Length: 382
View 1 (tube, rainbow, N blue to C red):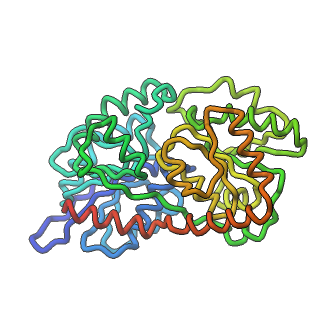
View 2: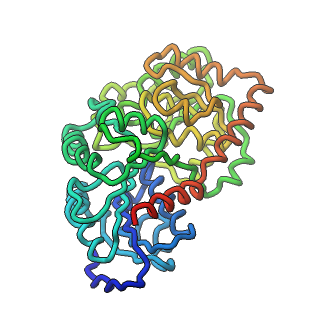
View 3: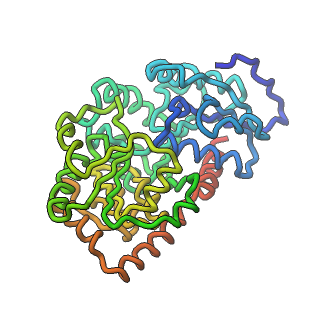
């Protein structure tokens, strides 16, 4: 980390908020790393009466321009050179005291982690879920221990928690016993994707089912693969394309190996924003049958691109889908298979209406709206 001397505070100095950019250690971001980047990017553009101190690795895609923004002090931290353990130690013991020395009165942590001890500064934490209570068997034991025994007490001590859905508000109250007045709800939003406008002109493949970031155990990939195999027996031209990659902090799923080599299944690996835009724009259905989500970003990303969505009746997904998706029981292969059939076979008029309503619904989830809410929250604690 840069060890430049922090600026001297003065009575007339603007107040300062520190932004924890530990997400920037992942140079091929997905999920919550992408969410954190776009939230901070919107915050830099939002009018505010305070300055920002950002701790981040400028090698993260799209982040370098932050260095030259007015009202921003950028602290270079080489997260992408560090392992997870070193970054967690930095978060636990360094950011709070360094931010306080730089005149900050509040630190925002955007990834459901934060220091266990306050170190004389206020803490605001974005909570994407409390999966370490909802589905503990899905986590590796070291990561589960860290979340429950380091972060759990930290969340209870934090000055304020921001849940990304009403469902997460309820689960925070249930598992962490945090009073409702210390929790706000601010929805996630849709990121702009390179090539999105051009992708909208591509023809849809009526035989293509697309799934993204389904590798975590609670996402339902084994059951989706079983449901797809049943449908492909009826429709030999059907394809299932899967984007994303397994993550080390979650347990392995050895039962997937044989299913992933089944006919019609194609593994895309990590996809760029441009390729993701094409996938959403050309699929007949986006499948996201997760059994536990704090938000479920692919649901609204797919709707924004005009793709019908099959997702689950569980947790935050009905809330985020807003009545515009086919909802299935995520624990039932029969239900997932029927949901996919219904989406593939929906009459043209009903399909067009569903797509139009989905686009309108998804358009309400913007990072500008989210940034405005966060600015108001920061101001409460300055």
